[in-house]
Image 1 (cartoon, one colour):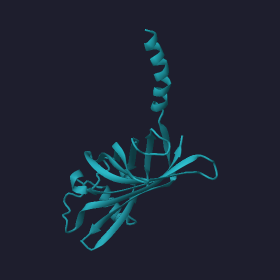
Image 2: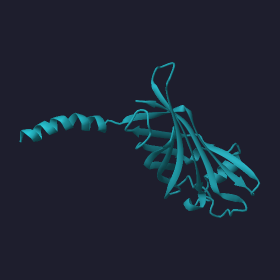
Image 3: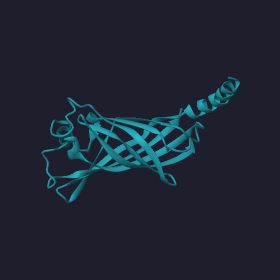
Image 4: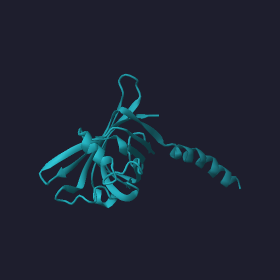
Length: 191
């Protein structure tokens, strides 16, 4: 009986320490989600989502390994610097924002590749369809010089097949590439 009490007394602080994750909040002023798709097989058209949010909860304050990463983009905020094209992209042929307002990502696994690079696996939901995706992330840690808070800059890259999500399904590969390159750059502040 005494051995169990002693073991519990030793284990409790250790469990509390390992359970305390580091929370990171997105600094929206320093965040951007961009995408690029090939048009007619000859030209890359770029765009972004102007309204995004993301959070990171990591077991270690200086390492993304094992982190829980969530991301949301307001599909209505799509911006390709062409208002007519943007309205078409908001319509039923593409993102159908009247029905599907958000694009979401939730990580299922974050593992270190080397140095500051990580493999991020997770579930991406667009237009009501959820599919597993693999992304690559780079994380750089520092201290903000003005407020002395810990910060991390995260760059995420990857390629997704838009047709798996029913986005632009009527547009064949001759008009638009199936693959879309995505790049997210964001700063997060430790909470």
